[in-house]
Image (cartoon, one colour):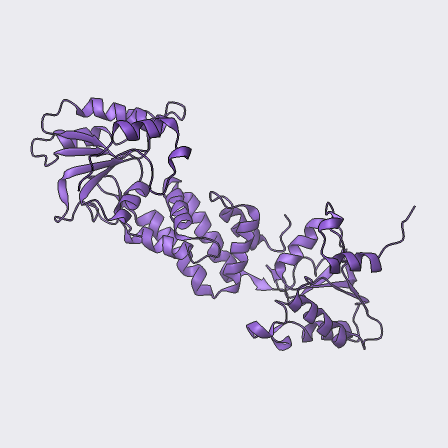
Length: 204
Length: 204
């Protein structure tokens, strides 16, 4: 693409490096910013830079945080006996948005993936074990909330082996089954099979 | 959406103000920037701010430019007798990418649209007429390259009325017809009708 200005060419190039944004979309975004008042661009650029340079990670759960301890870990109204283990910060946000969970989290920072060269030591697994095994630990239940993919299942299996010898800690996994609104006939056999084996007694 | 950090909430909010970017995509972009090294975010923020604050508009054609005169207007190898009138900078880039045009441009900055409150005085129309009517003007042909929508046709009609009394200036319009690869049976009647009326003699 030929651009009439080096400045716009640079901006389009930088925007197009973002995932899912091609050259055409990047140009549309750049021209939108040029049409809007200067404050729009200034506050966007400032918010991005501030986020990148000032954000830290919670020393307890490794989630993104504005302070040394994140707002969830610092909240004494939450149940510190339950720790929900997730791969990513995105999963924390997704679970928080359900409004169904009042415990705390532990963010692994990914899943075990030999193909991508991610081993157990690259993830926050040791700190999870330490957290659950500490003498003054409040942790009574570790909920594995990891996507049921090949890598996710490997990670969950590894975690349950590392955690199984802790005497006072139960390990659980989020329920798998037919999603709400899903049709039985289109469900894959493994999901449908698990949903029968793990059936729940009807509460009347 | 609940965010574990105000910094990321701000960044997501700013990103989600861009056209075509929702909250979920904005979060994905923000987390991508957090995973990438700090240089990525720094150069993105800098490129956007530099573009917005340093870009100017060419005093002749009103296209975006790094200097008082844009690189196309300043290029003496281009044919300054032909002026292609377009609505938007995006159209300049699209026509430049065809490699078929060696003249110069005039960017209106939009089209006449009574519904959106855009009248002829809100566009760079007077400066086009001055440019074509000036005593030392090189302009011999004005090519109207405006999208054939309701507003575009209104704008083109208005322009041809403003320009028709200039003695040495021809007015032309980009060809309308069946697009390359288009199927006749799916073309609308107006396009197909125009393509028959405006048929071209086969050059053998």
